[in-house]
Image (cartoon, rainbow, N blue to C red; front, side, top):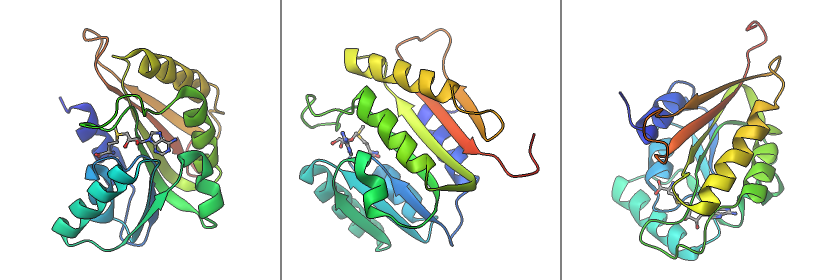
Length: 184
Ligand SMILES: C[S@@+](CC[C@H](N)C(=O)[O-])C[C@H]1O[C@@H](n2cnc3c(N)ncnc32)[C@H](O)[C@@H]1O
């Protein structure tokens, strides 16, 4: 079975092509940004920490990728920076590995950011979250996100939970896809 991050990457790779614009909503150490940049035309990568954007920049340089705009702002403000449709967005929630654990994503802003990226998502586009229920805010956030996604119209969106049933604190994935017109 695939781990959560590999599963998220498989979901993204299934829809992202070299003519697509995509978003990394939590650049962090830049692994997802590199993954997206190697498949898409252009990536808009957000993080509220300059340290994270510097690490992402270094990782992109190492990979020889220059099709990324790094944006030092909260993902809540994504629609203020982008005025064109996107094919995918990835959110790897929680705190920066090796960074300040107090600077973490939060339930309310994550749900607001989801609504923002949904407003930009094209038909057939995918939004993928990795949630971390192993710490208190992560659990609150994951539950709020699940509730919100469960309330999305099933006429417009397909949704999916990819979660271990016997390792309850393990990270898990929440996927949202805007349906094609001919899907039921
Ligand atoms: C788990 S890390 C992301 C890991 C990253 N995707 C990677 O592949 O290395 C979470 C990141 O989200 C960032 N973050 C927290 N709140 C944010 C917000 N409101 N907007 C954008 N980024 C945020 C943190 O600074 C941190 O770098």
